[in-house]
Length: 240
Image (tube, rainbow, N blue to C red; front, top):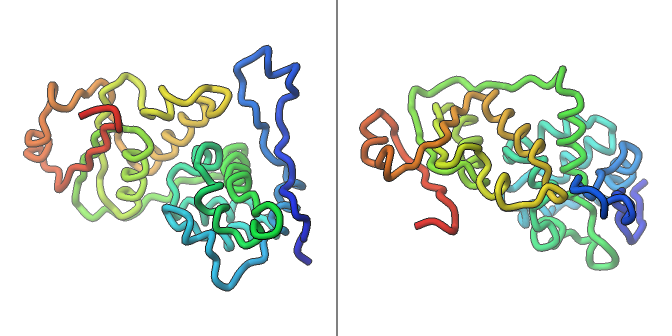
C-alpha cells in the first residue's frame, strides 16, 4: 500500500545548538526505515513526469521501487546508469524545480523526496564499498579530452567512459571538482563526498590531470594533435 502522507519524511539534521559549533554537514540523511517509508509515497505513475523533469533522465520510478523492496544497491545501480554524481546531486541539485517539481504528489501536499532518496542510495552504496565493483565498459579505441573537472566536466567524463571512450580530464587547479570543491561550503557538500564521487570515476578508468592550465601549458589544438578525437570544454561560468 502506498504511503499517502501529504508530507515528506523529515530530513534528520544536526540540532541548532550543535551545528552552530562546527562546520560539518547539517543534513544527516535518511535511515533505511525512513527511506523505505518515503519511497512508499511514490505512486509509480504510468507517465512519470519526474523523469522528464530530471536533466539526465534518471529512471526515478525504478530506483524508488527498488528502495521499497529494500534493494538499495540495485537502486544505486539504476541511478548510476545515467547519473555519474549521485551523492552530489542528491545534496545540491535543485530538485524542487526539476524532478520533484514535476511530481504529482506535489499537487496536494509535498512531492516525494526524490533528492533525499538519491542521496540515501549513494551514501548506502559508499558504506558498502567492499562489495561495490566498478563495471568497466569495453573500449572503442577512441579518446576524448575534457577541460575542467567541475560538475559539467565530471558528468561528461562519466558518460563518455561508460560509452567506451578513453577519457582524460585536464584541471587547472591542484584539486579536481571545480565549484563542488571550491564553491560550495562544507556544511552543504562535504569535500569527502566530492572526493568519493571522483574516485568512483577514476575506478571506471577516467584519468584526471591537475595543474594543467589549458591555454598556457597546452592549447586545444595541441591536445587534438595528441590523438584525442574530441574536446569537451567545461571551464566554468566564471572563466572565458
